[in-house]
Length: 248
Image 1 (cartoon, one colour):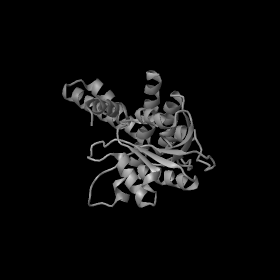
Image 2 (tube, rainbow, N blue to C red):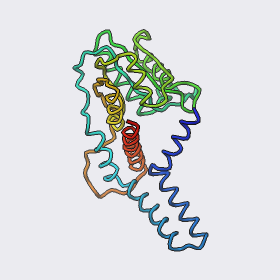
Image 3 (cartoon, rainbow, N blue to C red):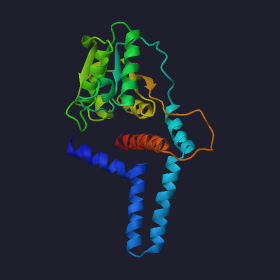
Image 4 (spheres, one colour):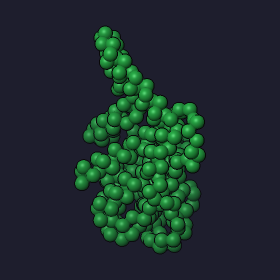
């Protein structure tokens, strides 16, 4: 991983829920041991309060819905040549099958891309994504899964160089120009992706998958780790959109 990208991810960690909570908690401990009781109480209270808030399912679901309700599921009617599947997480543990090497979100993206590809004659799937902390690119791993699921290698375009969504968009533009194409990514990630692709004058057709929202509206729920992760995903995307707008 490039040093600049590592620094970007490090900064992002500390302004997302878990990093923010840890930072506030550590500052609280610092003030506690430094005999600054008032500040210690404030920072420890904030860290505990944010932990409860971000882990509370209704709040997490509210944030996720704000993103996932922006684009409905794909209707499988467009007749385009290219389907772009954005990268996600993976591992390269050879003791695991390829179905386990790809993250849950990544697997859903690949499957959705294949479903669309099967419905459009002569279409091609474009896989992008770098290696992350592994020794193999995510784009390559996704293509291996697609190959195992019956996609012809000649119908795949694989590029392992893009490190983020902006770079993925730049690469896709070099292929399709201004022609419409189907964009497959997680529903939480779709608004930011569409923002970036459209900002380059492109014409993506949204095909969201990997939904996390819940239609259960009960407020009688205890905080849990799944809700904390949902809040993290949502805030990561909101921050990404803010940063994208700042960069123009």
